[in-house]
Length: 168
Image (tube, rainbow, N blue to C red):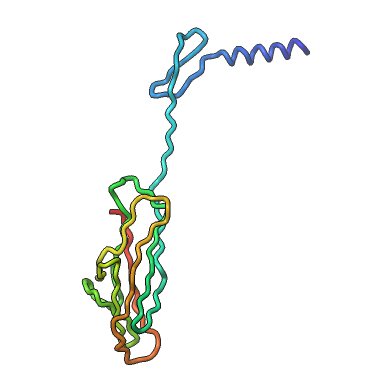
């Protein structure tokens, strides 16, 4: 029994002295007869691009009212540091492209409102937010303001805004 344990330990020791390969820029083999050498190992980790954008689901305005809502971005990872995740106001259901006075409607009854990003008045088709690579939460504030109350009908007046998100 002692003999087989010694044989197993000896075999393990011989295997431990066998050449050891080290992954490097070019493989380097080091064994017991080698001159003093060292090898480098490069560790790499790759992640894909990604981002999460949150657009508010709604805004409720009242006469002479201003409401701030934020478009938020988090976990923004882009492979090119010169690019950004861009949010554009692509369309508005009751407002034509290029217009900056928006129209919430109920049948033929209209309430007009505006949207600002900072001091810039937003038009249909404009960029409303831009986010660079950053794992932390970022936000762009939009300010909605009712400009007229010309409603001829009581009740909720609505408009659907459609946003486009892209990397530019």
